[in-house]
Image (cartoon, rainbow, N blue to C red):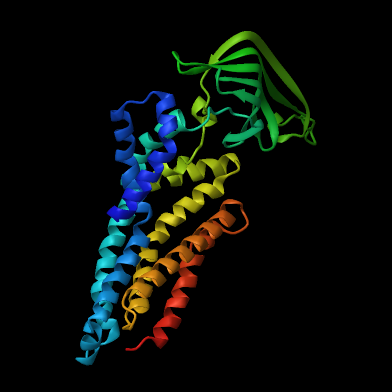
Amino acid sequence: MLILVAVIVVIDITEKTDKYVKAGLTTLQILAYYRDFIPWVANLIAPITIFIATVYVCARMAGHTEIIAILGSGVSFIRMMVPYFVGALIVAIITFILNGWIIPNASKSRLAFEVQYLQNKYYFDKRNIHMQVATDTYLYIQSYNNASLTGYHFTLEKFDHNHLIEKLAANRIEWDSVKQKWTLRDWMIKKVDDIFEKPQTAEGDSVLAMTGKKIASKPETSSGASLDTALVISPKEFESDYRKYDGMTLGELNDYIHTLKVRGSTGVELYEVEKYTRYSSPFTIFILVFMGVIVSARKSRGGTGLQIALGFGLSFVYILFFVLFRSFAEAGAAPPQLAVWIPNIIFGIISLIMYKYVPR
């Protein structure tokens, strides 16, 4: 783990040195960044390092004929793997806690650092933004400038049973950082009061108007040059979403996914993939440990080098599968709930097939 993390950090520093110099960062700022970067990388590669460690230890035992002695003494192969699974369980629990809460909180400052100093300046370029901000309430902005915190051609519409009852429109909205509110420029609000036909009874008496049939709508309009108002959105909605999910705990991920679905926003698959990946990672450790023991339990005349190389090869095949199916899920080509589990399912089946032929 330390060796791999050290190699990754050296490569990362080499790639980013020019950006550090260009941004005029101090040594303390850079060290603070790697204080958050190293735990994130270590946790990211934990399943693979556990797999390689399992292969290394088990291959060494096989090379010294220890596994043959264990099995020859009457211990079953499954019983021999119990200590490996106990170790996998400990690592899986720690990894789940780190993935779910500790690493995301540490990643908030890391992501802020990357957005500010390492990424190109972000410009919000989406147009015709539609959001459902509440039940039967819909917001629309034609365009937004995140440099001036200004949105153009804004409308907020409220409906009651599919009937428009209120519409607020403005040529532009500007964020007031002092008041923490939006200022509407050249605004107009239109409220619609429904008029109902008053049906007559047999005796000619009228009944309640609201029980009749709607025949017209009477709008009430007001307007002005400037209006301060509070909206459910803020400028954060239009900031860079670069790896935003890395800085979210499981609770925050669930809330944000719910918000995106309510608003009908695109890109929700990205956050769902991250959520389900965090739940599948602990099981990945068990599968890789199981495969690691099977791969390396046979004594090899050529020593442990071939088995360790095979372990590395299988690790990279697993990473390839994981990246491939994650990309499918993020693109919406596969359900996130299933896509993140497919590598585990495939390697689990491969492990069971290999287990059938391993000497026991």
